[in-house]
Length: 171
Image (cartoon, rainbow, N blue to C red; front, top):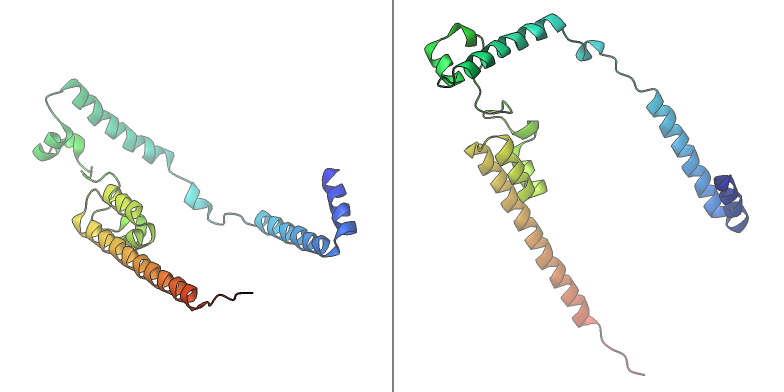
């Protein structure tokens, strides 16, 4: 009821605001109807083989139980000796599985150039201190700093030049 009274009030007071409200309302209706038509077409992307998952988890659980019962042995020791429990496991030291790849699929230079030190930190953490990727992000940070430094110098020069060219008029 409040919304209707507000629209009527706007229509009476200012017709241009009312027309803008009509355009806004129409745009919102179109957006909501378009979003209601969006649906996932690839159902197989969201399905999984439950038996394969349980098999993989049981293999991991067996390794975990063995290491828990024998605290002097680590998973890396099992892998080095070729134990049958860890056959088929990939021993990745990087938790994100990104060795030599850019962080989250975005080039490291862009992380540093767009997000500056935050992007550098993200690349450092996600790539597990991959020196090549961190170097690219650092170069991006330097480019970002140079761009904004040059922009600031030009901006200050323009402001100073416009201030000095204005002549005061006395009455």
